[in-house]
Amino acid sequence: MRNYLLVAIGAVMGVLLRYGCMLVISEQLVLLFINIVGSFAMGMLNAYFERRLYAELQLLLTTGLLGSFTTFSAFSAEWLAYMMHSPLVAIGYALAMTFGCIAAAFVGYVIMKRGERA
Image (cartoon, rainbow, N blue to C red; front, side):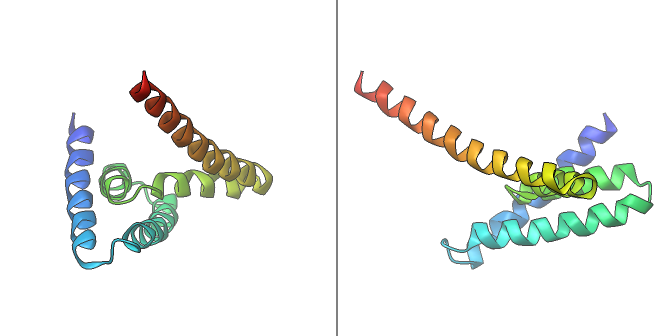
C-alpha cells in the first residue's frame, strides 16, 4: 500500500508540473519540451538508481512524477534498457512502438468516425 501512495504522490507532483509548463510554454512546443526534459530526467534517474537501491524514491520519481509529467519517459526508459543489451532490439522496439501507436491512433479514429455515421 505504501508503494501505491508514493506513486500517487509523485503523480500529483508530475501532473502539476506538467500543467505549470502548459501555462507558460506555447501550445505548439509544450509537449515536445515536456517529453524531452522528462526523457532526459528519466535517463539521469535510471543511471542514478542503477547503483543505489532506493526503490521507494525510484517509484516516487520515475513511475509517479515522470510518468504523469510526460507522455514519453516510460518509453524512453524501456528503450534505454534495450539499448544497453542489444542496439538492434532497441531500434526494433522504437520503430514498433512509434509506428504501432500511430497506427493504433489512426485505427481508433477511423472506427469512431465510422460509428458516428451509423
